[in-house]
Length: 53
Ligand SMILES: [Zn+2]
Image (cartoon, rainbow, N blue to C red; front, side, top):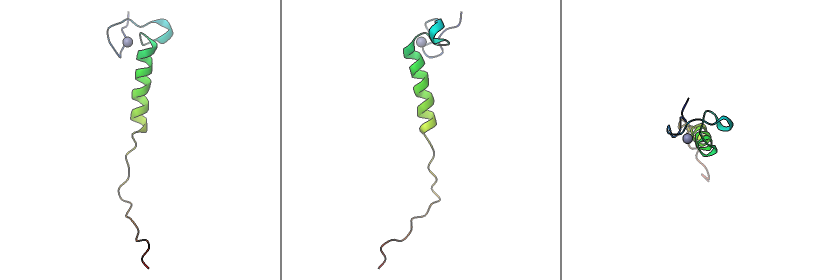
């Protein structure tokens, strides 16, 4: 039987496969989101001169 990839302790349960519980399923989702939201900011945008006169 496959074990939960998050905690790797408990066996996967049908409603939450491949996870063991909703908690672990949520954790995996959070990982995915945090990774997806971490967008690298381009730094080639030079600041323009404003209020020069
Ligand atoms: Zn688990």
